[in-house]
Image 1 (spheres, helix red, strand yellow):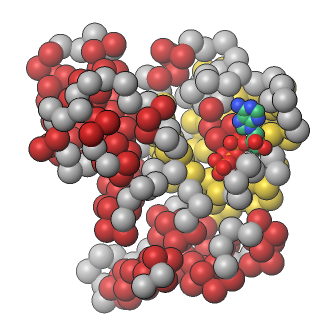
Image 2: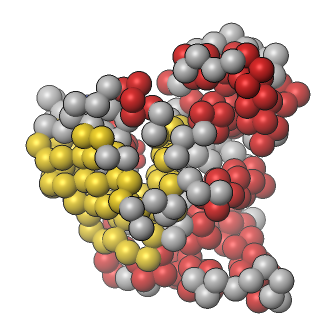
Length: 281
Ligand SMILES: Nc1ncnc2c1ncn2[C@@H]1O[C@H](COP(=O)(O)OP(=O)(O)OP(=O)(O)O)[C@@H](O)[C@H]1O
């Protein structure tokens, strides 16, 4: 499989503080669905900002779809990578939902009929077609998060990076969003998503990268990484019983059972159970 994100010895220090990244080496191949996890301040957002040119490598090298991000223009990178910000309010600035989702497409100079088609399809996918004319700031945080997601869906970029895509969503909405993202992956998009939610990792990621204090602590297939309970404990990602369940769920998911099998029901049930444990009910 072709490598679409290639990160070599990437380090970054903000002016005011400690180094946020300390020599990251990471390869992501076309068509993968990868979770990036780690406790607050581990460097996850700093890392992904390099993929869209919001930060340029101070040391090391980052290549995205064959383009060196040190020299690539942001407009060039944005055709390859769609980015859903952690806080939708850093992304949303138009006065209607429809205009917001259309914004990137208008910038690309697409014909109006194509823009309308893509905007409506994206809003339908995130369940916001009724809110097309609404003022984004009148929507709930969860709905604004879905507006941000729709804007990226409409761009149809080969790579999609999502920083905490399920923030502000309830249990059902979280599942719907992750299923939508998984469908994008099945349709061929490469997905990198940041999350604190290990049940989402267990249920949806093929591979996990664990960041800890600016370094990669663990990296590998989800099942393998989630079975490394002792090392994961260092990152204090979740209470041990949640990690244990997440690990078992990942093991079941990795069996890759066909949807018609009865066992898949067990996976779903277990996932639902895990989500309810996390919700505290
Ligand atoms: N703009 C900034 N200026 C100075 N320091 C920053 C800036 N952004 C992040 N940092 C610091 O860099 C480190 C890594 O932050 P980063 O936001 O990348 O971590 P994260 O893993 O995404 O955290 P979270 O899960 O809380 O979003 C932290 O110590 C953070 O305080």
